[in-house]
Image (tube, rainbow, N blue to C red; front, top):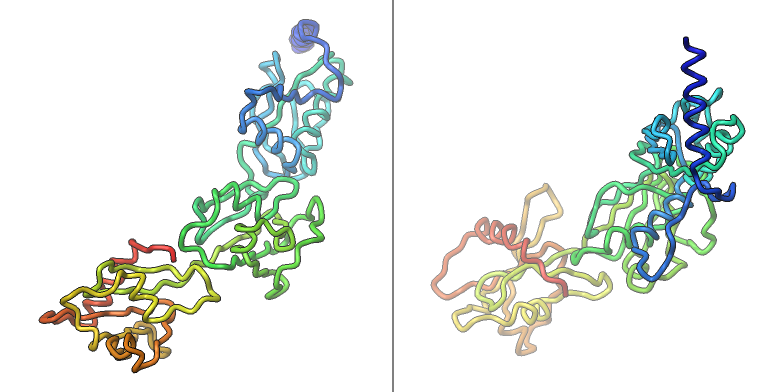
Length: 340
């Protein structure tokens, strides 16, 4: 009875194969026509099929056109193999691109006499290994799949770039045991912090596309884009808020901060301004630095530099605010951060 069932399945598969249009052996993973209306999604799918390297434990979606019995999800086992119905031996999947695996499955089906002209598409449903984690000051943080070779610039492009409060640097932390890269990027020369950590000038990389700053990413890597420092200007000014120090090389000063805040109001007491700064001692401790803005504006006192997280507070006539109230206002105002 079992032998009869097997013969019937083979007859059905053979009938399906005879109904398929002939295709060349190397075209077992068909590609959509790249006409004028081809979408960017099609281009991305093509890149995925050609560059993604299958790893063990990947969940693959395999579609054998016209053969429902074989079209389903397959998990790559610990040996890197997948087992398809009606094939006498497993197919090696790990280490292949999706296009290569499509071709390998097609060749095995033809060799077993099951199909004459197979059309096969392989896609990735999920992967616990071939991913990179992007966090910090990027527009779309999260977990991204890693293709055969993916660079930091490509990752940032997929994440739609840097956020407004991004700093100049990103830290790339290598996985404990990264997979061997599919290619070498000889132009990459980041500053090396340790054997597993790289510091990259991501500001220049993103703005200028400088290939000399790009680095190749490996499965399991983590990329953290540092956030720029922020200074807060509060009190009797025309535009209170937090201002992003987007350029680490340019010093923020009291006068520049006041200018960004639209100058102080008529009710301000500029001679009694104060800088509230984090103390270098215990966390949460702050100290006050008195600033006479009248003297600074009239060149009778030097302009003072501001540090990241400083709060420049200009009091208002008749107003009485405690240090704690000013700090709490700065925390609330931080959602209004404006790039410089």
